[in-house]
Image (tube, rainbow, N blue to C red; front, side, top):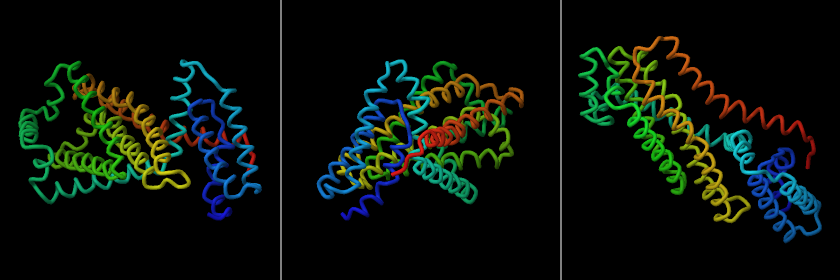
Length: 321
């Protein structure tokens, strides 16, 4: 590879490593390994170039940073949620966008399928669920399904099931990112047909105010898990200057961190579904407040805060290649 092409392919990454300060040991170690791999390549093919000298200096800075920023485990826990996870959200914002688009398109397919095929909802949701819901609607309690089980056992069951689905969605990324797309489409179609069913019964607004109390966090977690799976598959598909195994290890590690990061969201969504959603007649203000707070949190923590954090880090260091 010509030196100019090598620089062009990696300059943005090098610049980001130079500008984005971090106190997370694992992240610094990953950057150091990444840069030393590039440095080894440069020493092999361009031993006396300015690029090699630059990479050697950057590797030295990262090496020093690793030993200057050692933290205790308690601090490590805080920095993960405060800096590392938001940083990963920003780094892989494209995969998050792709996951969201796959899900929304699938939800639209579910809506259209349910609209033009009467039996589609039964195929997707199952006859027993549809029949039970029809009976609940006839009784004047369309969302009675959320009241049939003990709150604690419902919370535990849903938390376990949703955690399993999220893990499966992530792990399926090993199949060249096809697996997460399949799971995102499956869940999107189910959601679209499910919501259309209630809207067709004249219960659309009520379904949003009840179901999305827990659904906002639950669906967000599924989409993020899908993005984590896409990240893992991305390493296999696009290794760039790494070997395919190196790229896969890095992408799998980053995806695993994101999956770990959404587990509290999954647990909170399960708590809402087990203990809160069952109160289908709660005041309108309270329902909107819970739903709105959940949505604002997801938008802030996954999109706005990572972008703000990245911009602050860039402003702290204006060095360029």
